[in-house]
Image (cartoon, rainbow, N blue to C red; front, side, top):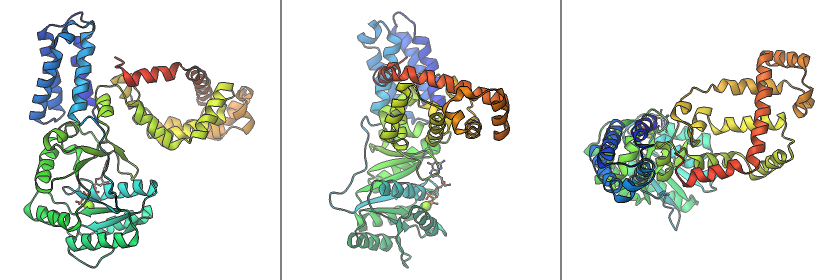
Length: 443
Ligand SMILES: Nc1nc2c(ncn2[C@@H]2O[C@H](COP(=O)(O)OP(=O)(O)OP(=O)(O)O)[C@@H](O)[C@H]2O)c(=O)[nH]1
Ligand SMILES: [Mg+2]
C-alpha cells in the first residue's frame, strides 16, 4: 500500500547515508525529496508542509548534524514524525460499560460501510460477544438484502423491520438489542455520491436517536486527498469518534492514512485490507510508519501467525526442530499454514530488511500448490524418511503429482534448506535479530 512512497523516501535517504557529517543544505535537499514523495503519495498539502517543518527543526538540530551516522538519524526523525502524525498510540474501539455498545458507520456510497459492518460482526462474534446488524440504508434498493446475506453467512442476527424510516429502524433496533441481550449493535447507514444536506440530516437524526458510542467514518483509501476532505465534512457534521480506512490492499498511495488524523483530529481505528470478511486490521501508527520506511512489520506478521497456529502446535514444532526430526510431513503442514497467512507477496512485505526490489518480485503462489501436490504424492514412509526417495520413487512421485522429476528435486532441496535454516533459527540467532529489528532501525 505504500510502495511508491517507501521507494521515493529511500531514494532521498540513500543520498544521506554514508556521509560523515551533514550540512544544513544536505538536510534541506533530503527534506525537499521527502516533501515531493509525500505530495506524490497524495498527502494533504498542509500536512506535508507542517510535517517537513517539524522534521527540519529536529533534523537540523545539533545532535543530528554532529552525529556519527546523520543519515540514520534523519530517518529516525522521519519515523518518529510519521508515528506522531498518525496518532502515536493505537486507538481501540470504545466499548460501553453497560451494553450494548452502539457503533454507527457512516460514509460515502461504495466506501465499504456494509462490508465493514460484516467484518466487525465477524470480529465481535469471534471475541465471544453477540452482535446485531442493523440495515439502515433504505435508499439503495438491495442494500438491506446485502446486509441480510452477510448476517446469514456469519450466523449473526440482522434486524428486521417494516419501517422505511432509517431513524425509526435504528431506534427500535437499539431498544430491541437492549431487551434481547445483544451487546454490540452495528448501524449500517446509507451513503451518497457526495456529501449533501439530506444525508447529513438523516445521519444526525440517527445519531441523536441512538447516541452511539462510536461514530466511525468509513473512508475509501483510494480516494486519497478527497477522502480527507470528505472526512472533514463528516466530522464537522457528526463529530465522528474515529475513522476506518478501507481498500488499503489496493494501490492506494497512502496519503489518506497520513493526513486524516491531522486534518480531523480523529484517530484511524481500523483498516480494511481486502473484500473478505476477515480482512480488518487494527491501525498501529508505529507499525505503519515502519512499513512506510521499509522496516517491515514483523509484529503484525507474528500476530497473524499466532491466530493461525496454536501455541501447542508451535511448541511441538519447536521441539521437533530442536531434536532435528522435522520431516516432510511437518514441512507440508508449515506450507499449509503459510497459505493461510495470505499470499507470499503480502507476507514478504512484512519482513524487515527485505529490499523494495525483493518485495516487489512476483512470487508465484502456484509454486506452493505444486509443492503441496508433490508431498501429497509421497508415501507416509517417504515423508518421514526422505532419504529413501531414489530416482524411481522420484519418477513415481512426479507422475502422481503431474509434475517433473526436476520439480521433485526442487522440493527436496528446499526441504533440506528449510531444515537447516530452522536449526539455525532455533539456536536463537533469528529471534535475536528479530528483536533488534523491532526496537532499533535496521538500516
Ligand atoms: N479491496 C477491498 N475492497 C473492499 C474493501 N472494503 C469494501 N470493499 C469493496 O467495496 C465495494 C463497496 O462496498 P460496500 O460495503 O457495499 O460499500 P457501502 O459503503 O456499503 O456502499 P453503499 O451501501 O452503496 O453506500 C464492494 O465491492 C466491497 O467488496 C476493502 O477493504 N478492500
Ligand atoms: Mg452499504
